[in-house]
Length: 194
Image (cartoon, rainbow, N blue to C red):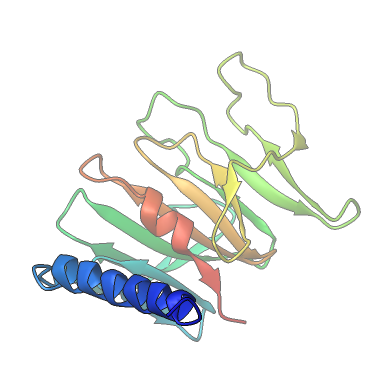
């Protein structure tokens, strides 16, 4: 009997643990939590993608607008949601520059211009109409962050919630709103597909 005591204790522990486990798990109900799967917009020609809420309508408009972003041409506008929600512009600039507001715009905020300095191999910022203090000096651009794809995000002086994301020195994605939604999630999700 003494020789079987360790075996008996092990069996009691095993059966006791199994009984407690069975008691606790038989009353557990499985709950399936579903998270919405984000929609993915991809433009293989311009070379980028972003995620968005697929419950929102998405419409594309082909453009050839050199007024909206001086020094560059807006080639496409993607509306996500209703008017005033998020707009994504594809902006082409062979001159390696983009300015965030049209010339003569009504906004009380001065234009912000980003351009690629080929000698310094860095993004630069300038204020064609002067900044809040009236200064027009050019300096190295400071990133506001990076996208999940590692692209730099630059702030804009444009009204509401606008960010400029260079895909290359000649291609930009500009994400903005009319004040009706936040552009942060879409901005953060932009990736280059090249």
